[in-house]
Amino acid sequence: MMASLDLGSSEFRSLRREEQRLIARRMPAVYTVLEDVPGNRRLLEQSQIPFSTPAGSLVVIGEPAQEVSRLLRHPLVPLLTGGVLGEQDPVSRQVCAWLINLLLPRAQSPHDLCVMTIPCGEATGTLQDSWTPQFLEHVVQLQGYQTCVMQPAHALAIAELEDHEFTGICLSVGAESISFCATLHSQPVLEARPHKGTREILERFAHEHQKFIWDSNGNSFLNLAAVSRWLTDSEISLVAPQTEEEAWLASALEELLLSTCFQLKRKVAACTDSILRQPLPLLISGGITRLHGFRDLVAESIKLSGLPVQISEIQPATFEPYSVSRGLLIQATLASGDYPPLRHPLEAA
Image 1 (cartoon, rainbow, N blue to C red):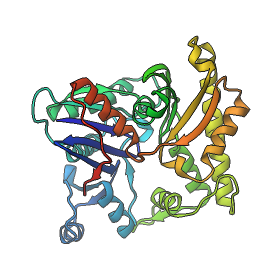
Image 2 (image 1 turned 90 degrees about the horizontal axis):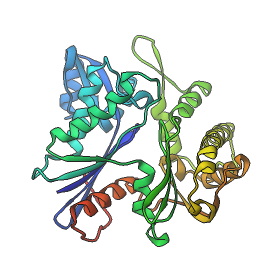
Image 3 (image 1 turned 45 degrees about the horizontal axis):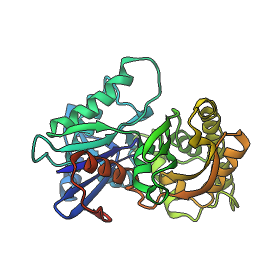
Image 4 (image 1 turned 60 degrees about the vertical axis):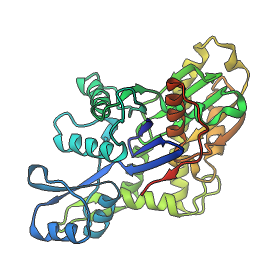
């Protein structure tokens, strides 16, 4: 069996091939911690919500955690704050292993391969920066898989650039980082991953626009779940904002993209490969990229920054939210030498 695992800082996704079927699953990388009292236990058991009991608490993960958070007005905890697991946070480690085990069944043979992405944390020079990737890869290996790690943007190129002979530029916009890759016939010419993503913007948005929840003790927390629902359910326009909130979001995203382009500018200018001097397609991926007008912000940021690339077209990824996972699975298939056609995935409950 071959599998892929896209470990994003906001969501974990898996894609695997079993005989002639593609099985896709995804779970939000969040959890909530409740006090272990009879009322909370009764609520979870009656609702048939799975939970664990570390250190005398009740821990709920993924989508059930989001439901419990809304019902009890309890804060959600991001699993990978800053793109890393807390070194002194055993609950986060347990939750992470739990999520991966739910998304990825045990390997069927010692030769089964899982190609995966690893979240990119803030570079602080501490041991924690190297510890998190090692831990995540080790959890997958404990499921019996051999592992291989790829950058999200490289996997995106393999998944989506077939019509361009796998040659172009890919940008994967995540919660904690933006992955950039330029490829020539599927081989990376230049890769980069600036340590800044959209989560900081959503946190600032929630704070400045008073998106809070209060628990039973009167403590306030940022209601990031409500902000995420607004992004998903509303007809937001980044090029023609209709509200002050939309205008704020458009300005913040433009600032992020412009900063990213300036960080990439020196790396691109220093790259000697002639492919970067030719017109190339640019593919963008990530939940935030589906907002109306995001492509226009990308084009404007490239222009304003003077990023030395010629873009022939800017296109959103076709297979979202599994575009990166699809590229990872294709890479696993190529490595195994077994080349069946990849269909659209059937998302498992």
